[in-house]
Length: 159
Length: 159
Length: 159
Image (cartoon, rainbow over all chains, first blue to last red; front, top):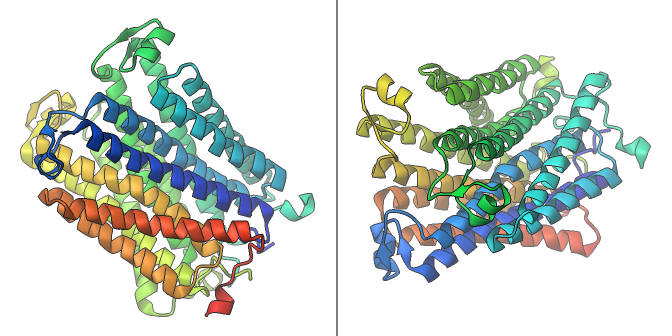
């Protein structure tokens, strides 16, 4: 019962791996923002315009704004995913449920970023919706565990 | 001593539940942003204007900006809450302390979002301040535990 | 093997402390945003302009925007750090590795905020890069542990 948040629990392993992928995805979008900004050579801060020999403007280049919005959207969804995912594991996620919902989230968010950067709809909205469904499904399992009154992690029984 | 981050610890149960509520709160504000945008029919991306038969503009509709700012404010506060809350549980939060500080945070942030969307001051600022006090109080407990040198989880002794 | 995410593990202690510092850093930048806004007396919402006897404008004062961007940059990097850091501890971080990478991250992000607010380049970009290297190094360790197939926490052997 005490090894729910250890690698002895396959659902926790899945969480650790999925969370690391989401973290790397966030870092890659941050680096891509800087790369696109350096390529377009438009900067909102004078010190950046000087450093990169670009020009200063009131707002970011449209291409930079697009990456920033894709990045912000991932961050907004990653935080609920990461915390509800941890709660889901702590309240007894099954190995199969964790794999489906967590690796599913990782995959649809990669598709979301691609669709966002390429300006492709309705694929972006569909990917966003699937991510929300993953988070919502895990949240329901947590609330069900809480309301059941038992609050016992059950992954051993299920595996 | 090894069951601090398991459901055997009432403070961890409280954390799991409060964190899930905060995660759902974030998802609801994300969905509300999209709903208000679809109702106002103003879009910053051409692919969205086409898909929703709306018009494209340089910036979001004022009503959408308000939801986005409420959402961003929650995210900025949720991340410190979630991480300091976990640290607080790990360093020996009492069951009563966790309930007060965590369910208190969940409640004042709901009030914050309502006050933000309704444009009601000073209620928004008061709710924000109470949320910060919750995070600060937990952080002080973590630092006290760290400085005491003992670093032993004490929830058993307190319960 | 079951005490990886407890204070019996020095790497987890380091994580708890570093994560709390990052959380406090985020809260301080949020409070600083509000302070600069109150000093510059420019507000995007009418209810704030009324409450603070300032003027309403289309966008935030340039000084407020700078703090907001520093804050957003920390948040974008804090989330991957916090989650990859937890995964790194869960997969067997050594005490020394955790101290270097985590307290290093805390330190370079403080330097990043100072450089951002002071408009000092290339220090801001260097600090950002060092933070990314910390996250990337921890992510590589997690993926190596996952790919090795063993997935056993090894901190006992190393300490």
